[in-house]
Length: 166
Image 1 (cartoon, rainbow, N blue to C red):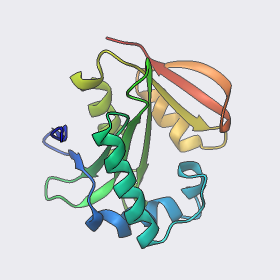
Image 2 (image 1 turned 180 degrees about the vertical axis):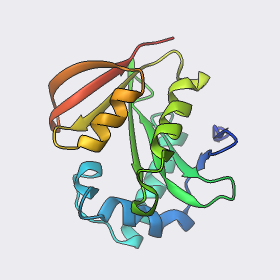
Image 3 (image 1 turned 45 degrees about the vertical axis):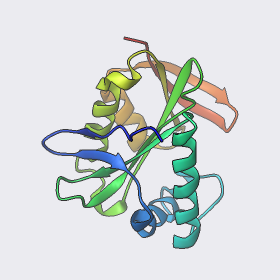
């Protein structure tokens, strides 16, 4: 198995998600206000979230995706960030922050760490958000990525941003 690519700063640690994160991960994906932005399958209980974490770990082993837990230096789980389609020309980035930690700059810092990470330097990165997800749109506007407009994606209309290869 390939070693997991941990990324750290003085404020955040991006490391592998574990089954111990299932409850908090479930809370992110099931939160009524924003959960529908993160998953098409609807709310997930803790058991379903644990199974999803296991599937995500398999995708990493296959070289198709990486799911990082966003943590404080004390390892408290704040959310997740993921890079998908790593076996293609363009990777996609998604993220979710636990409701208790939103609007505190954690998503911005985690996205910045991913956008600057050398492991994705040779990839074009796509960041998309739902048309009505104002918070995510505003965040992506701050990230220094190029706004492409509203595009019809397989999941529906989305605001799409691109970070070119470095």
